[in-house]
Amino acid sequence: MSLEQNQDKVETSQRSGNLFVVSAPSGAGKSSLIKALLAEHSSAEAPLQVAVSHTTRNPRPGEENGQHYHFVSHETFVDMIAANGFYEHAKVFDNYYGTSRQAIENTLEQGIDVFLDIDWQGARQVKEQYPAAHTVFILPPSIAELERRLQGRGQDSAEVIAKRMSEAKSEMSHVHEFDYVLINDDFSRTLTDFYSIVLDKRLTQTAQSTTYANLIAELLV
Ligand SMILES: Nc1nc2c(ncn2[C@@H]2O[C@H](COP(=O)(O)OP(=O)(O)O)[C@@H](O)[C@H]2O)c(=O)[nH]1
Ligand SMILES: Nc1ncnc2c1ncn2[C@@H]1O[C@H](COP(=O)(O)OP(=O)(O)O)[C@@H](O)[C@H]1O
Image 1: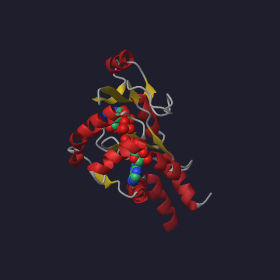
Image 2 (image 1 turned 120 degrees about the vertical axis):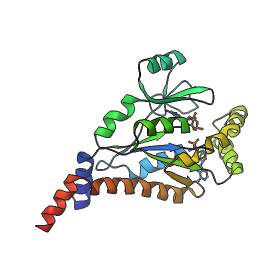
Image 3 (image 1 turned 180 degrees about the vertical axis):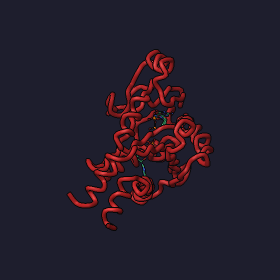
Image 4 (image 1 turned 45 degrees about the vertical axis):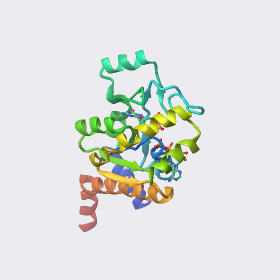
């Protein structure tokens, strides 16, 4: 195993994972960026995972229960709220969405970096409970491009697109509450910038870990 792989292995086993919260107006590209980041940069030595949310929204064509979302009834969602089952939850575009406690707590303890694709209300709730969370807001290059992407995605009706566009500016008005802002114009460049944030947090935490200090002490004997 190379030193780098060994370092990654040591890092993951010795550190709590980082929690990344990613928000954006619908259509800005947050799901695509998280999907591409995990596809290109998650490894056994340094795993990245997205937390699967619960929602009362109906599945879109191609969405699998348990993979894209846990699709539940309104009654089930309300029961989960009553049982304190959510780390955060919010009503977004007339549906309920939430991140279950189970979806993140065990994973972070295993040293896995976890990504939440949630709205600004959820980001605020996470930051209040877990100030160490790193929050990232994705902006579209323009309102016109945002609408083009929603239409191009072909997953929502004209009525749903109109509703999401009407709320886009309200969502974006919370951009200053976030630690990082990325303008998702060129996808590959945005993905590189996104990954540099992830790497910076991983290396910062590693440099502060006792294990890393032990490694350095061994080298300097
Ligand atoms: N607070 C919160 N928001 C969520 C959660 N899951 C998704 N959302 C947000 O709900 C909004 C609608 O998500 P979705 O229906 O998948 O539409 P999309 O953003 O166009 O892909 C988006 O802003 C998501 O970030 C969650 O678990 N908690
Ligand atoms: N930088 C980009 N340039 C052009 N199209 C993009 C870019 N990023 C995402 N898209 C496309 O825009 C649409 C919305 O992206 P998506 O990830 O579903 O957004 P969100 O999850 O924020 O709602 C998708 O069809 C996606 O392929």
